[in-house]
Image (cartoon, rainbow, N blue to C red):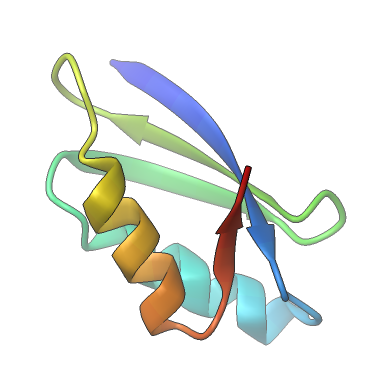
Length: 69
């Protein structure tokens, strides 16, 4: 299993983090997600050689937040 950590802009509360986590868990290939509100980041564990970052970005943006960097 592979993993990537992304920075997320705009999260202010635990509810925000839970929403982002739920959205990312729906992305194809994603096996687990851990969102850290304190660091404004999400660690995504996924199967396969690559993760579709366009889908990741869309999932985050659909919850009202942004992928930074």
